[in-house]
Image (cartoon, rainbow, N blue to C red; front, side, top):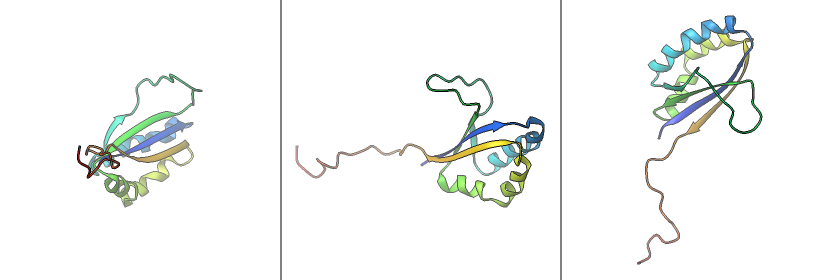
Length: 110
């Protein structure tokens, strides 16, 4: 099942953040991730607007996302973003690709 890294970033030092932003996409791709949302216009349709940018990357599965996140290469890049803003990161499982069954009627004759 695919997994998604969802990052809300409030970058306060764009110049300091630039080195991290340049290095990370190649590493994400090498580990099997693909960006779905990065940059572009974001519009709040409901609720209070937060000063965050949202970045979403898709991974083959939770294990691949965690392998990237805990890799020595990514751990070495994380200090590049230190002090450049605040970041909230969520790992979420995607949809299961099997149909749901009604367990209350399972095994009973129609």
